[in-house]
Length: 201
Image (cartoon, rainbow, N blue to C red; front, top):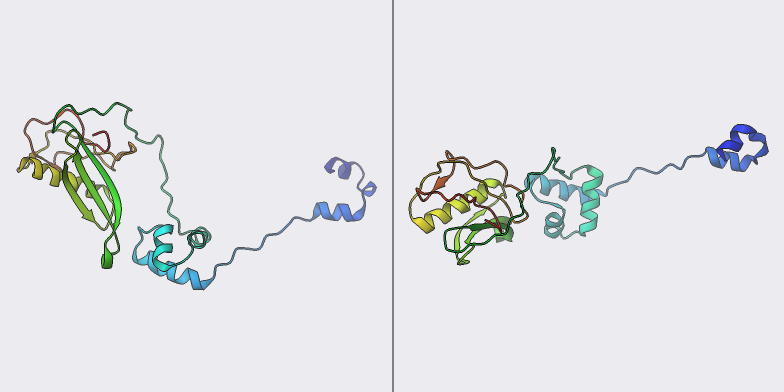
């Protein structure tokens, strides 16, 4: 078609030439204020809430809320810089208590306080719950607080970490920054050589 237009445009009927020149125009998407205003008010109050939580709290359809988020540009996408810091895939085996601990986080409904994040720490050998922390946010400090509670519960005292160690979640992604000896308390003078991490701690 383009070759024929360049060679001799008069050989092609006028209607076809005009149709080829026309570019379809798409109207800009519109957002109903009935949905946009309460959604905006809720995410201004609770910026950590995602599409599903907002939809459930407001009683709106999940797809409608997600569409409003997309059109308005209210979705927060974390930009990944370089390679994601993954942990090496090694088998997690605990032959005795206090060798390896596991951390995990989940969201729970807290009634008047709304959604909260619950961080748990268990012993991988005995499957005993060692510590927990309930927080309004799901930051790395929530997992660190659960770890401190577990250490106090297990050993009854806190020392200081002599070297840096790492917390990770159950999919192997690290919980934010590494935990340093100055910020995290440790319970035993003889620190284990294995890191505290989730699912394979």
